[in-house]
Image (cartoon, rainbow, N blue to C red):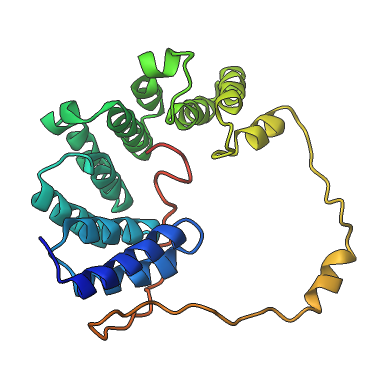
Length: 254
């Protein structure tokens, strides 16, 4: 669907803010996504961005609805794994497992198939099937020595599952392999490995430093406001995030 030039520019500005804020300020990203959605709800990219913003704030029901809408518009399968993870977030791991066995999975690229495996393993863990989760994560991608974008997260999920199963020595080995693959520090594998090795971290700042810092009044100002565009819409206050831990980021089982 094409938009008038001015409206398209307004929508694009809000989508840029969503992309910039979603990792560090997910609630703000969500606010911008709602503006874009009000301006252009029939654009697939807007529905997808709104879905990811809702997902980042643990609004899983809303995220799933947006992902489904985007998928209907494009006919693609790229969102299948994150849709399944939304089912986990809604407390329906059985549905996530059912989605892992659907024909859509075969249409995913390698990265998408690995992501689906992470989600399926997480669903197994949700259902208390830890050994099944371990088996789900096993495969050529896990055994490969080649480092791919998904390698660190896959190894981390496997190490964490092994540790949950009480297989500490194997878990230590795989946390070590995760560190080797995680050049960007996307996981806390090095900290987990240190814990298993009995390393304790001491605060070098001392006890008096935080008191001095407390005297500094925080800056509560904001230099930016959501761009309402030509439609004159304003952002609603995002609802409080679901208290359930994010199924993927916290345990890396997505």
